[in-house]
Length: 180
Image (cartoon, rainbow, N blue to C red; front, side):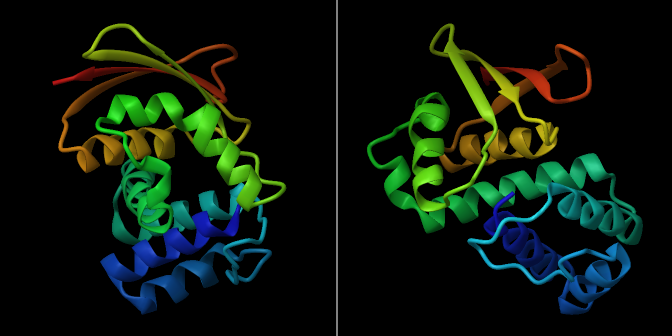
């Protein structure tokens, strides 16, 4: 997983809980990297999971809620860093439809070795969409948060129903989005 994801998570912790919390989470998680990330570096996704678990214990907020909150935050960070990715797009569904074929292609160009999740989008109507998420990292909560952040960016409200598919490990999930 690319370092930008890790640095964004640490920024979120600092903004919400302060620098002392960042240091405490890094120390308690006993990360192989020591919590030292560069945006272009590649790190094991388990380090992110370890930090989320530690932060959950320290804040008494569920890992699911923290991870979704991080996804919302990460969406804003990505759009601030790469506004050209959304130029001309007028809705969350327009953007979500372009993630796999365009945005993830751009990510791979910018960050050689990046392995973003696969997102297959199918638009049913103007108000509903199905997204199939596939990733061995099983970060569906982050994906859901990213979708929520996307809808918020466009001033839309979406209802997200989610189900695991395949072997039920979380590596494949179906998201059914409905504009509210």
